[in-house]
Amino acid sequence: MRGGLPVPRLGPHADRPRAHPADRTPHLPIRPLWVCRACGGPWPCAEARLLLKIEYGDRPVDLAIYLSGLYHEATHDLFRLNPHDGPTPRELFERFVAWGPYRRPAVDPPPTR
Figure (cartoon, helix red, strand yellow):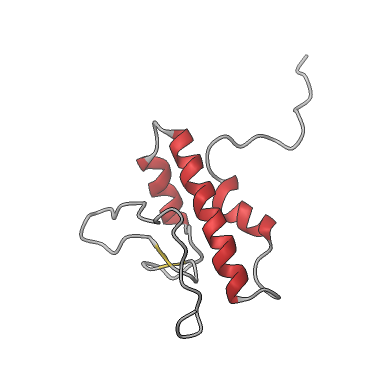
């Protein structure tokens, strides 16, 4: 740890979504805090989610893998920052992965008649 903050690990590099339009600050995370450098909200913010869905529109498996890797990195970073009051793994899963592709309901829907 340098300066009291953990050094980010060598997991996936959070380089998506790309800035849109190109001259604006991209909605990328500031690590290890995982806040959006453009709007200051918890990353991925609503704008980042929208841009990620557009950018990975025809590659949902790639998006799921990217988000899962960042979920792993964020869990590590945020737990090290605050192991007692930080977000739970479930909260981080909802924040990073659950909104992405391939969501399935917890139970199968009832059959239609």
